[in-house]
Amino acid sequence: MSNLNSKKKPFYKKRFVLYSERGFLYSIEMNQITEKEHKQTSVGFISLGCPKNMVDSEKMLALIAEAGFIIDYDTESADVVVINTCGFIQPAVDEAMETISHALGKKKKGKIKKVVVAGCLSERMREKLLERFPHIDAVVCLGARDEIANVITNVLSGKAEKLYKSPADWESRIQLDSDRLLITSAHWAYLRISEGCDRNCSFCTIPSIKGKFRSKPLDAVIAEAKQLADSGIVEISVIAQDCTTWGRDLDEKEGLIKIVKELEKIEKLKWIRLMYLNPFGVSEQLIEAIAQSKKVVHYIDMPIQHINTDILKVMHRPDTKEKITALIEKIRKAIPDVVLRTTVIVGFPGETEQQFNELLDFIKQMRFDAMGCFAFWPEEGTKAAQLPSPISQKIKEQRVDKLMLAQQQIVFEKNKALKGRIIECLIDEVAADGPATGRYYGQAPHIDSLCFIKKCTEPAGSFVKAKITGFKDYDLLTEKI
Image (cartoon, rainbow, N blue to C red):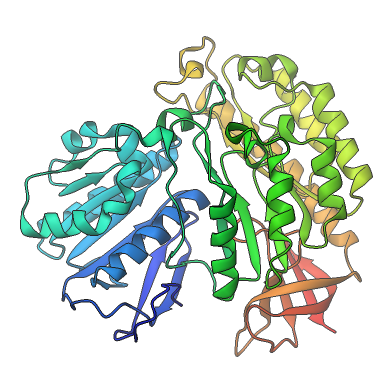
């Protein structure tokens, strides 16, 4: 599937596969490339990291294809391999380092000619990345994303430049994400509305990697959404470091509500999903807007990070246990069928057994529909990395296990209670020899569980009514009605 917006007749057709942030494989049919001079150079692309990184990957893929390069599924033997990295936390850094090492090993054996590394790790490490891996052919920082086709041309011609830094004024502008080659399914996509972050969370590397917070102009956001809808997208997941802060730098109050109202006018869009809503940005007006919207699904992804007020204070989060508790109650009262997802961090420096148990009890009490749990990593350059009383890795892992087991029991109980309920599912894939797979509004793509739908032959992108007949682990078993 291609979303290159070219009026010229396509001339090349090839299947290629990309790695996602969760290790899945996306196999997409690319059947439209512009009729520029055909170059025989093949480019393999590996995309690591979060949905925001995926948007960058999609933009780079479009630029590479439009330049006439052949995008090849085989990243083991392509002429050029581009690795779009994540550098947010140590496990992501380790994954990126391993991927780079593997590609360079293939280069040494002569199976790959050139290796280009882009993304967050490039921005975070820059020269250090070249010092560690001197055989990388080019390191492309975030602000140089749109130069990717020129970078590939340069490395193939043997030009000496190896580091493509972000421009000096990068933090004062925002890159646009239109004309992407989507690597999601053909019917849903991400819509990024801002970049960077001005928050000062003590554990987070994002401000140092992504730069200052800046909103994408409203007209650009809506133009991109319309472009996606015109290409067949029926579900959009709105993403940013924190969606609730959109427009703050543009003198907009309740800016996310303004975006929602404009997105609702796009007839072809059926589902609008709001991701990454930090608690301190979720206002009564936003809750009301979600409750009243006919297109914004009743799904809220709200990372609380912890619940102990003292830990939150050291994290430099403006929340308290009382505020978060009251907010959750307010959301559930206004939106009774809301599906609430959260993210927490355990093993923060100084976290006592009592403070952890407070978090554990809160998770059991609040009964979130979904939860992500991360062990704290002392990231270089963050304030939290310098804090005393670090927690051992063994204890951190034990605490993660306890929380996830508690959450698993909650989810299984909720799934059991759903039996017999009629839901609307968006079909993601239809199998010839088994049930179709899809999602109801409470399941975000690539993050949450799935619905398996018997007796469904409707194509991907269709909406069908289904009855929940049971569940298998986190996934729901349903039958089309």
